[in-house]
Length: 258
Image 1 (spheres, rainbow, N blue to C red):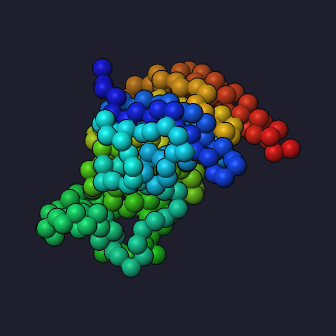
Image 2: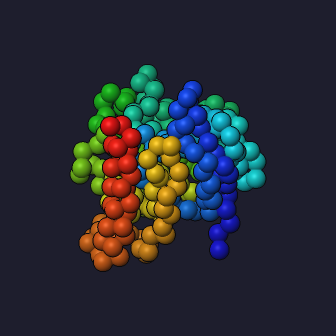
């Protein structure tokens, strides 16, 4: 049995008079790939930003490997929905950036960066600049940059949300293949139920604001996963349960706004 490496205990986040996230508990085991679903504004990204150390809870605490998270750290790699590459740096230097900041020798930086560019299918684009890349290629570069730093956890906030459907599915398969090889621990926020089931070893559903964890399901699908698994009975059954759970919370959020 894998040990828990991340512990979220009683975490709340209030913005002025608005409670965005109510007391939330979550345990994440080593090598877990947890996908997080829920209606817009339910606190999914807020929870992820608190784990990343980019935001701070109003109450409660988050611990990684028994140490309280109080700010960003190299032990957590973050990939956002928006393209966050440095436009003045080449693809190669974007991937090298974190390693350079840690004082690694240039030759070692290049060796690691070239290795991850090859893994994400960008071996021939090292000297290109972000503006010369498609959205999918930019996200592959961002993924390579996060992985190059060898984080304890990979945090992903709807990283494929801006991509077209075909590119999105290819990126899902790419990331899942890398996870099956690297076995990083992943927290992955998404609005897409198919994506949540296909990618996750566990799926967490959050309630309408103020968010809380409403449902936590183990995904009963074996690895490695092929896209054809999306038509399997186990996939369809879990998708139906999650669809009902998310739909109920979307309706609750609409009722709140009315």
